[in-house]
Image (cartoon, rainbow, N blue to C red; front, side, top):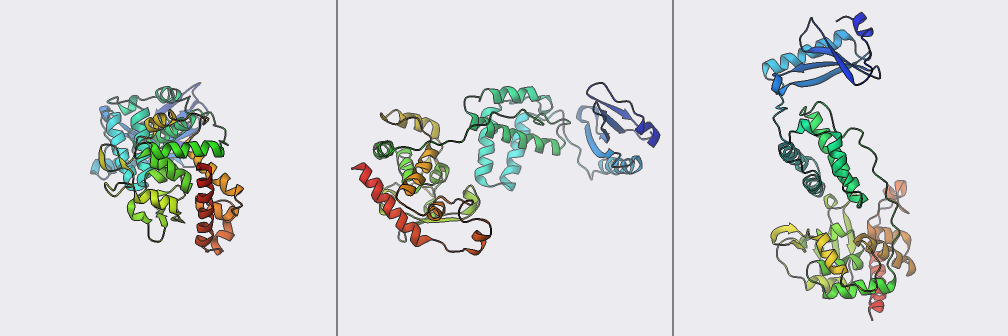
Length: 375
């Protein structure tokens, strides 16, 4: 293989063709149907062979690419570069290895989310990771067409997982590459009326623990349902009437300190303390509540005059009620822990006021308003 032969390599009508160098076994140039030329090096036994990209032509010359290939082959021979175990590894093994990596490199909540999505929606089991195709992934995602949000999250988890698998050289081709776009869900605008909010709160007062109190606190505090469900007792100061959510447990990564009113305090004081979590997992100590879908179905069956809603709609309802009460928008955003909005950019950098007194006043007025609805 010379510079002249590389320039004149024929372009295949479809797919890709690799032309191997006779001078250096394992080194070659892969040509795509679009005319792109990529230098590659292949190493390992037939049953676990790995292909590695060493450069793209003409950005990288043949001479430099051949030198890079020599270094990689030498590294494999000396044991410096570990041989991948491709061909034998199963999906479940690759998945578990990735999840172990995710627990070390991402937030606990993110790692747990990826674990749930990969285990629930991609049941490839013992199928070899190299045998999973883009069509397999599309089939799994198509079954989630009725829940577009979950479908989008599942696609993201699959893409991140297979990108990692590809980087680890466990596969030659990434089946998650260029997956079709998921249908974009229109932004939700649902806000519960005062009558609806009142019925939801009243029914939640009588509903079983822990879901009933979770719904109550979602309406009382306006925090994200996942953040309410993951509350830990050490974050709650019942003497100062303040809750502090650590940055690693909230969506925007910023520590969130906000006041709570007397109604929320009375509710929290009457909850059972089982372990470190306010809402422990069902039949499992030292874990957060995880029975969301089933509990919501059971709870919604008790409602009579409430149109379909999501728990996140309670957060939007909280914000809307504050607007009706005249709460300044920047105070409401502080309560919601919104990064963008009235105080952002340079203003957010220089304005370090906590707005705790303003938030406390707003919370008291909001609880009074909610109590009047319940009468």
